[in-house]
Image 1: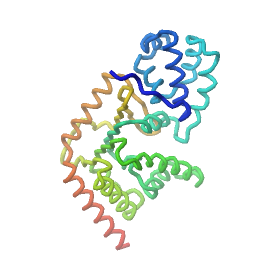
Image 2: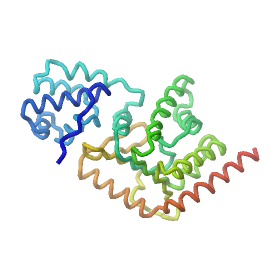
Image 3: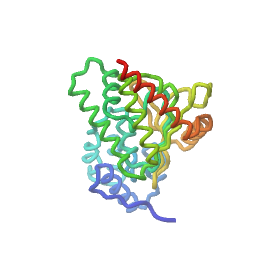
Image 4: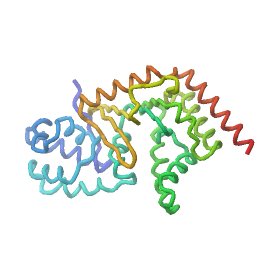
Amino acid sequence: MPGPKELDPSSSPRALLGAELRHRREDKGLSQEELGLPLFVSGSFIGQLESGTRRMQVDQAQKLDEILKADGFFVRNCAALKKSKYPDHFAEAAEAEAVAKTIKEYAPQLIPGLLQPEAYARAVFRAYQPTAVEDVINDLLAARLERTQLLDDPTTPLVWAVLDEAVLRRVVGGPGVMAEVLRHIVNLAQEHRIIVQVLPFRAGAHAALNGALKLMSFTDAPNLAYLEVLGTGHLEDDPATVTRYELSYDLVTANALSPELSLALIESVAEDYAHEAQQR
């Protein structure tokens, strides 16, 4: 079995902390499970810290400095992790997304962030914060568009999105914006960059009625699930819970249209929006 992936400590603060944590843990002869016990976290969580897929919290850094005799190293460097261009509830999920091998997402209301072009994303942020000054919206937009650069790589990560039909029918930013975003998704799928399916209204009740779901897998860390509701989100790493969410996603895909029929529907709806925009 191959050993854990070597991290480049210069690539990010998380990689620096992860590489140092792994080095000091192994130097002390501790397993991930043994180190996790006094922190009240699982061994898999320690592995996620070491691989850079999870964000170290200050209280954890303090405990690690104590256990590993690190002379304040983790606390000093943990401060860099608190700086993020993303909202607090999404920052850790965005960092995990950036190193994920696969990203699978069920979207019940909106186009997933990774697939949003500028006009659609701007309309979403303005709806969230109708009284915000333009600089705030522009900062949020810049961070969103930076995330979409993950798709610039032709193969990694594998992105598989299931869109509820409501996502296609909810007019965000007007018909012209909707035509643009749906054609963008069609282009990504036709270029074999993403897999997309539509869950039609006629599917009725399904396994993800409670809301949005994002699943992420990694080369050298356990899978994660991210669930988001109004103004907050939760990153889940418990293996049994993640497995249950993975089953929910599989059941949703089983009830969705095939990729071919999904693209035909998306293209048809995009044409309707384009025609509506021309009539205005």
